[in-house]
Structures are given as C-alpha cells and as structure tokens.
Image (cartoon, rainbow, N blue to C red; front, top):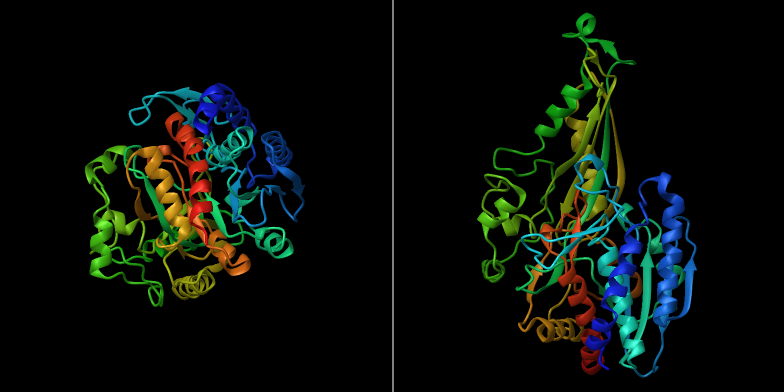
Length: 461
C-alpha cells in the first residue's frame, strides 16, 4: 500500500480527528482560554505518538508549551524539521460567524465545491499543521519514511512566538536539521499551485492618548477640553499622504527596491483584480501609488490600524469626552527593514505630532524580521517537484504579504533555511469570521508532503 492509498482508506478518520482538534478553543491571546490551550498541546502530542513519532514531549516554556517529536531512520539521511502552531486567533467578533467558531461544520463554497471546514484555526494553522501529522502517520504505516523527521509545534505564534527564540537556543542540538518545512502559507488557487519565497516582517504597537484626568461632560467642557479620540483620529489620518505613502520619517530608508525585471517576473503570476474585489466585496482597490495590488500586498511595506477604541460604546447615548483613546497599529515590513528600528521611528514620529494638550504612550507589542528564501536550493526544488507530482503542474514562486517572525529566527539561531509549502487560499478568511479550509486542500497537503520528504532525501548532498 502506498501513502495515497493509505490516506484514502483512512480519509474519514483523518477528517474527524481534525474536527475534534478544531473544537478546542486554543486562543493564546486570551487568558480565559489558557486551560484549553494547554490541553490542545497534549492532544497534539498524543496524535504524534499515535502517528509513530518517538521521544514525544510537551516541553514547558515561560508561556505555552512546545510539542516535540521525532523519527530517526538513518543518521546518514537528511533531517527535516517540521514547524507548525496549535494556537489560534480569537474568534471575535463572534456575532459575524455563520456558525459557532469552535463547532466546525463542512459546507460547499464557490471555491470549495467539494466542501470546506468552517472553524477558527481550520486553515491557520491547525488544518495545515495537522496535514503533516497525518502525512507522517501514512509514511510510518506504509514503511516509507525516506529521511529523519522532527516536529516542533508551538502554542504562541498568534501572539508573536514570544518564547520560541529562547526555546530554540535552549534546544539547539535537539533541533538540529537540514531544513525547516512550514505549511502556514497558501497557494494562488487550487488549480494554480505556488510556493511562498518571501514574507514581510512586522512591527506591532499599541498607542494610548490621554487628555483630561477623567471623562468629561461634552456640553460643559466641549470646545475647550482636548478630546483624545478626535486627536488620535487626526494623528492616525496624518500618517499617510495623498499618495498613500507612509510619512513616518525614515520609514522607507532601508526598503528593498526590486528591479523592473524582478517586478515583471512577479507580474506573470495570475491575478484578477476584478475577482479580488469581488472576493471581499469592494468597488475599488487602494494603496501606494505606482505599484500594482499584488506588489502592494507583498514587496511594499504597509501601515494599518487594527483596532481603535475609547469613550462610551454601550447602547444609547452618553455625552462624554473620554479621558483616553487607544489604537493598535501594525506595520508590515520588507527585506532590510528592521522591526525595532521601525518601531522606534514610529514612536518618535507619533510623539512629534502629538499636540501639547495630550500625553502619549506607545507600547511595542511584538515584531518580526522579513525573510526571503532561495529558489535554487535542494529543499525548494524538492517542494516544487512534490507539488508538480500531485497538482500536475510546476508551482509558481510568490512572495507573501504575511509574516511568520520565527522564520528569520530559524536562520539566525539554528542556521536553517525554511521552505514555505502551504496549501490554503487567500479567500479562506484566516483571522476573520467564518475562517475555513477546503477538504481538497487538506487532503492534497497530506498527499504532497510525503513527496517532499522523498524528493529532499534524493536531492540533499
């Protein structure tokens, strides 16, 4: 029996096990879900043991634990370190979900006519992480493990992997490998496979603007007392000019500018602006002048407000001038931009533009370095060959607009390059209500991953 036959024979069980995993609300950002997040680590470890991994351990950190497991078949063979995460984003706003976020349901969609799993974490990253566990199970069960495989599955990716670098340093020898394999990215379309070759970095801050020492009556004080909400909105609005360029001093100093040849090669990847607009129900795109929508989403830095609040938000009216206003702001970064440098430049700029009538606090939340992976390495070529075998066409190399901060850490601490072989679609609504993951994509991943290990074992010198 080969791997694909094994997968088909156990298809229903592999699906049901994923659904059970998705029922665990492992939200790392909310302490209310702490017990569930720890429990999820134990469940993942149990699945690794049942799949055939040795030395499986739930390793404690200062935050949520890391699940480790391995299968050593031959010291002369190369080693692949598989990375994924079991934590998920908060489900909020829960009222926008068509079905409860942690009660997975399978429904057909236009892009997933065979069905898609709707649940928080379905695509990011439980579904994609679990593909590796199930592919590994199939490889072990059929006696087809062509290289050494290690698993490192963490529980804090959605809050910036705050303790993972310490884990990497503490377990450097244990994690020794030849390449890292990650499925936390996507493909262009189910009939257009692709491999991610670059990720943007991240600087994420929270800002707090304080005016009067308490909430004030807007009739008695309005017109003279500073309004922190008004002021914060004005400050945020001033961060970009009329061409949608970010005006923070020095923001673009280290931005990598791609050549016209490189931009022309990127433009060969299929992209329909009309389909993009339709997919998110907008009438027009916007962004930095002089760049296409795919370029704005991948090779250019951005600044976005992720949340803003202050004052009265309950039912009915309450005429107050709030004492404080807050916003969460993220900046996606491109190669050569440093998150600490950008955070410092943002803080200096924001303090500079704040009026004397308010005080300001900028808190760095988390960040990550941008990363670019080579397309001429044996590992990339193995991923390309594996996807070509299962999709029937050679995958397109693309740069992603997303961030996986730990990818840069793998290179800096472990000395390892990463292959980003994901199977999700941009339309899968990760981080949003009604996140979903196609059954086609889940099982295509399980089918493709063993080919990667086989191809890498053959190509590795």
